[in-house]
Image (cartoon, rainbow, N blue to C red; front, side, top):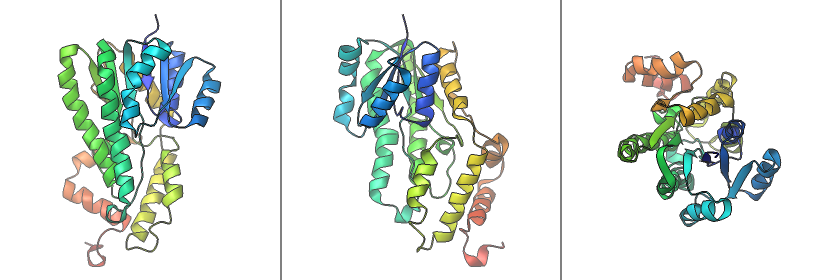
Length: 282
C-alpha cells in the first residue's frame, strides 16, 4: 500500500519539485494549491497521479476541513508525511513596510503552518514525518528581511519544541532550511517592489540588497537538491533533525558563525550602504 504524503504550497518551486520527486518514489501524493489554474495545471502535469486540493491556507476554517477532505474524497485516514512548504517572502525596510505584508507573512509562513500541523497530527502514526521548510533566514537574518526572518526563526523554535513533544507518539519532526534555491519566489517579489522605496532614505541600500540577492541566485542550488533531501527525510530510518542545503556554504553558513557578530553586522551594513556617512570608513 502506498504511503500518503501531503505537500502544501505545491504550485511552484520546492513544493512542485517535491511532488514530482514523491511521485517518482511511488508515494500517494496530496498537494495543496491556492488557485484554480494551479489545480488544473497540476492535474494535467501529473495525469491523475497526484490528488490536488484547492485551499486558501490563510483561511483557518478551510484548514480545519482538511482531515475530512482527505477521508471523504481520497479515503486517506493515515498520513506518512506532511511537508509544510507553503510560504511567501516580501522584502522591505521594516519601518516602511505595509503592515498587511507583515500579517500575510506571519499568517502563511507560521500560523497557517501551525494550524495545518495541528489538525493533521491525529492522522500521523508511528514513524510518520513532519517536514517543515524553513530557510537560512531561520538561523540568521539579513536587512530588509526582518519579517520573513522572524517567521522562519519562529518556525525553527516551533519545530524544536514539537519534535520533543511528538517523541511520545514516535512521530519525527524535521526541518529543511535552504539557502538560495532556483525558484520564482524572490524574482516575483523583487519585480513588484524594486522601485517602491526609491524616494526614501533606504533607496540605495535596498537597491544594493536586491542586486546582492539576484547575484546570489547565480550560485543558487537546483530545486531538486532540496526535494532529494525531503525524500531522504521521509524515508531514512534515522533522518537528521535539520538539513541545510546552502550554496557556497562556508561563506553563507559557517563564516557568519565564526566572525564576531559586531564585525559581521558592520561588514553587512557597509556592503549595503547602511552605515551613517561619517562611519562608512571606520
